Image 1 (tube, rainbow over the protein chains, first blue to last red):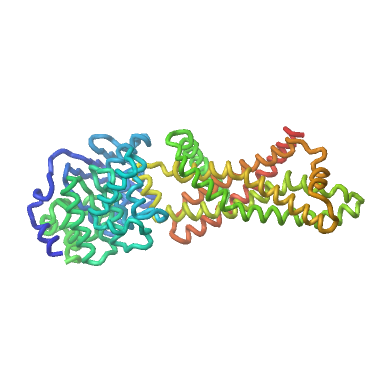
Image 2: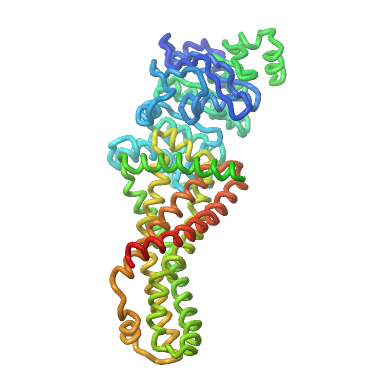
Length: 263
Length: 250
């Protein structure tokens, strides 16, 4: 944990190679479920190599935001552009081409419970590459080694802990060497030590692969560790965005309440 | 109630359209289809065989006294064969499979839905309709007629055994008497109408599974409703198909 905090205190631009090229642009995004307006005009831009942490209260639409970006949900109105391509109304094949450039870590890992750890990580490779079995096995081993799970290849997801499931989920999300990584509550439900390990792992992988990431989290410490920039959602809008220090110094009541509660 | 029923049929229509689109586009998921043949076919085989045998036995025992009463005891083999091949075999197979396979599909897909595994498949740029739904429906369509043949065979064999215990008769004579006047079309149409049962079971159960909400309670509801709805539609389809068969194969 000390290592993570020290890492977070480095100049954020030393962590990864951030360029000014926008990778992901959300403009006036609205999403409702029945009468409930979850997102009410979200505007966000994420540039290449940047990690944006999206914070907010439970039910503020953070996870919905990620699902809109990968088109698991459709926007009611507004625009989402990935690498300059508008994704709203995109045909399934075109969307799948974009999805194969994105990795998604689900809140509860969402591992396929009928497949082993090894088969879970191999799943995207089987579907989207023409690798031979030995090449695929090597790649799976490499991915699982990078998340410290190389000794659990044959285990079923139900036989490993929540933290280990998150690691495997992360390995699966990185299988196709994505350019964009979406992480939904990577440290939720984990003890502080495992959370710190996951944060360190995410930081290491971001550096290795120079990923552009969006991390949805409740965990301010985790957000401080792995993100270059934070955006705080409140009543369906971005209440404030900036560095951890900028948010911590804000005199906005909601932001102050959010940070005070955590401290 | 009416509004919810109409909404259900509307959603089923949208779901069916997605399934049709997924069916006719590449890749064709042959490996998963073969795995589903095993799940749907091989693993249903013992239950279907047992159900067919039970029906054959009961038919022999029940029909014997009735036919004796009317002095038509010699018609017993024909009555057993005709009943099993035309109606009992296909319907019993349809209902047994809708119970075993329908519940399995509803629960499996429902469980995958509530644990976000289906979202994970979609996020991996794989069409879940193609991988999970089309494969199960195709397996049901192909496997149902084959299972019906098994049910028919076991039913006829058990019917002969039950008859021969009371009134010894060789299997050859039993079949010879039973198949007199029976044409190939008498056998073909009833057997292949179970493909429609397979379509119904696969489609309705997958639909119920894919729209699951609400955790374990929702999974339980999906499993139960898959069985109830697919059994209901199998029975309704049977009535319609019997009428159509009588029109086209008089």
